[in-house]
Length: 337
Image 1 (cartoon, rainbow, N blue to C red):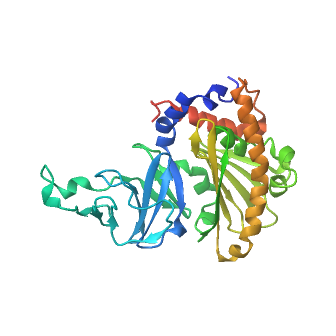
Image 2: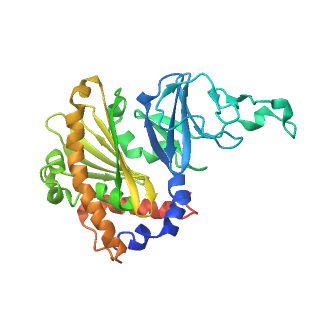
C-alpha cells in the first residue's frame, strides 16, 4: 500500500486531541527545561501538558514532582518565579512542609486531623525524570518508551556532540493558531525549504542534492554538509520536538506543545557554550526569521484542514512526515507495546 498522510479529521477533532493526551503524549518523554538552569539545591516550576511540575536538583540528580500539595492542591512554587534556592518546600496554604526528596516533614497542627495521620502516606507524587543532552526530560504517563529509544537516532548519529557542556542562552515562546501536528509536520517537511525559505533555512541546509535522510522507529534525521567542519543535523523527535545540532556545538530545541485542538505554542531554546553567548542575539534573530515564515505557512494550512481538505500524495522529501505519522498511529493504538 502506498504511504499516505494522516486524515484531516485528526487535525481538527476535539475528541482526537483528548485521546492524544493519553495514547500518544502519555507514552513519551518531554523536554521541560534546560539542565543548566537548575543549580544544586534549587527548584523550578514548569508545566507539562496540563500538569504542574516541580523540578528539584538534589545531590546532583534532578527529580520531578507534581507542583501541588497533596492536601488541597496548592502549588509550592509559582511558575513565574524562575529557579530559586530551596531548603524546604512549604505549602503557602496550610503549611505542609516537605524536603527536596518529596517526603513530608510536618503538617500544621498534625495531632488534630479527624483520622490517624501517617506522614509517609502523603509524599509528593513523582514522575519519571532523566537528564540527557543538557535537557531535563519528564514522562507524563505510566508506561513511556525508553528515553534511549525515543532519542535513538540522536544517540547514534552524534553522541560526541551531545556530550559537550552547554547552557541555556535564549528561550522564546510564540503562540500558533494551528494544531500541533500541522506545525510538527511542517518542521519535518524537507520539500518546502528551498521554496518557502530561500534566504533563510535553505542557505543553512544547502542544496537538496546533498540531503541525507535517516529514519528509525521513533525519530528521523536530515543531515546536510556544513562547510568543512561536519554536518548540520536536524532531528525530528516525538512527541512534537525538533533538535538542531551544529558542528560548532550549538543546539536549538523547538517544540510545539498543544494548547487546544487548533492552537499550540512554538517554544524555542538556544543552548551553547560561553563562546556562543556573545552571538546569541544574532543567532536568535536568524532562527526567528525562518520560524516566522513557517508561522504563516502553518496557520494557513490549518485553515485548509478545517475546510475539509483531503491531503495530496506524499513527495520523497516528505518521508520524515510519513515516519512521524506511522509512529503517531502506532502509539495512538492502545495495544502498542
